[in-house]
Image (cartoon, rainbow, N blue to C red; front, side, top):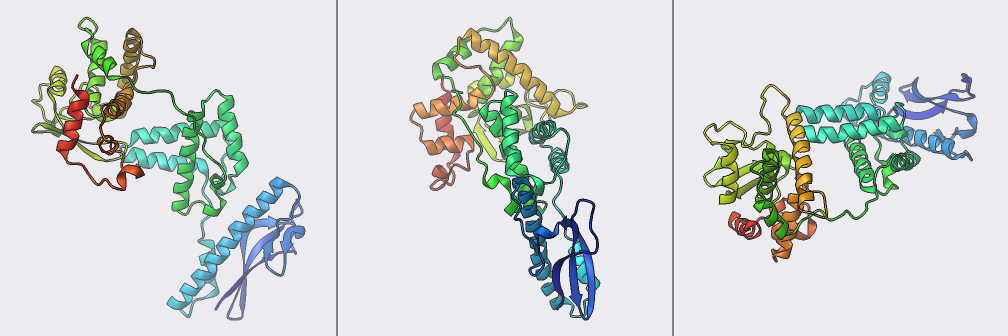
Length: 404
């Protein structure tokens, strides 16, 4: 069986005093040296064991040596395993076959290029919202790093701490910082799963994502009643914003993106069926008279392929951009309405979801039913004993909550 070991090529010294590290392959009386593209000084090399000894007194240099050594040792372990598999498949393999196995090992990919790959994947699958989240984090990282790209394996704990400090110094709130760091961690973990980064080198093992308690995001049932009774007959933009908010509330706090993409053909009998963009969960909701009144204001229901509401209106333009524009416009009007009602919090489309859950809790609805109604499948405390509630249970709960 072929034998492999790292050696330091002492016959060739670089200008910085380092020597190149080679992989030495010994197979059937033949020897071959393969470049690892790494180098080190004699002081940090253990000739007998064929590895780097990271004994530097400087933290950054020591970290770099540990990183290189970890990568090299992992590649060597994988190569030895591949040699065993190769010998079982082909006992007549050559020294070049072993060399090819080593050269085929891919190094860590760069952070910026991977973010670009993630965004392209999401956009290709129509997940423009998620793509936008990755874009914002990518742009933030690029500004922080002044355009200098590094690989995931080069990323260290200090980078994360410095990035966090940079965000805070530039006026970002704790939860906004948390948003960026969770997205960054998510990208790193995806890279690990795809073999593009080393799990044992992840600085996120030491880094803890910080959060702060968010301000109240729900309004009481009385405020929903006040909103419903407002007369905006002379202000069509306010009237539309109110209608969309109430429709979302009637639909268990349906997100605005899901409301935007609703089509007439999703109404089957007296039910509205849709798939949530964020989680791909399927929902079915009984259409109440209040919901139908709002639908009839904006759609005759004659064209089954038409969008339920006039949010995405131009088939020639990007539907995601139309939804984002309308979201901004609707939220601007909702905030104005909220001030009229003297609410303690800014009124936005998202408040409908929190309000539905909060009012449900105050009405005595079981937490498990609220969780199912919102589609919180990952809530461990409810999912342990909850598989699924029948539509009637959710319909009754929704009727109780939205009857105003």
